[in-house]
Image (cartoon, rainbow over all chains, first blue to last red; front, side, top):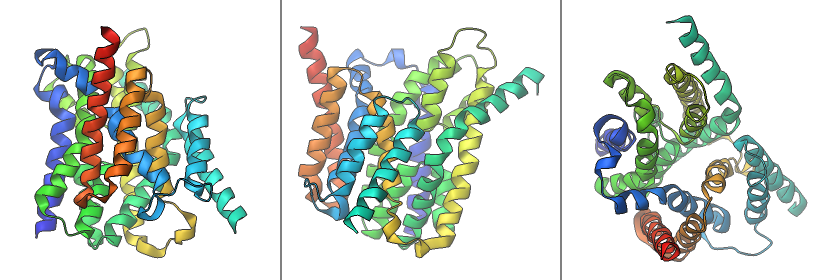
Length: 105
Length: 230
């Protein structure tokens, strides 16, 4: 039962954030400080997801060269900073991970 | 549908399709994760149809598995959805002239990839009157591909060998969005502080590390921007 409440609640939260300014409000009416802070949301939230995904495989911090996700992530970052198509960095990152895992055998 | 509207719609479908190479495995992972967390396949698929957000779906799966209270789960969903506020604010001037039903549909279909494509399309010179059809084509394409992938993942369940490390597609999908978002020194500060905080705060219960790290990153970005202005 509570799982269905969470499912519906997640739908409400995602829709309201998406619709916030497109449907309901004019961003110009909000204080300047709010809009300045809003500009940093993607960089902060995406980094808070990506960095643990690279540095903490299996829930434990691993900054050594034995962590293939760290190296594969570095490859993906290098590609993403040169090639605009997101597909290129995803493919390069997965290929690097599989290659490193095969090498580690 | 006007002939030009139809060609804009089809152009939207075509232009977004390269992104599906990331979307489809990510959707598959989200479907697998929902079932792996103890949700039924039906619940996982319903979540996907209603929320249509990969990272929100993964957060719900992780917190349902951890048996977190509903409010904690929804708080985490809110934090990962904060970026939609930014997208919504940036996109709204382009859609302000449209009737409410169009704005509701395009808001519902808003995704990281759809937003990036929309801003690119609206940024091009020329006649903008039918570009919402392009956004609709891209959004519908992503929606259909995403749901098909989630259904496949939820039905296949844990059949995929862990050695394929398919979950890494999730990290890479967000990395591919993060890198182009780092345009200024302040953006970089926000990302570095958020990333470092996420590692330090990893021990916090209920994915609170994500909330803490996001707020710390936003504060760092604002601070660097202010220092730069002075």
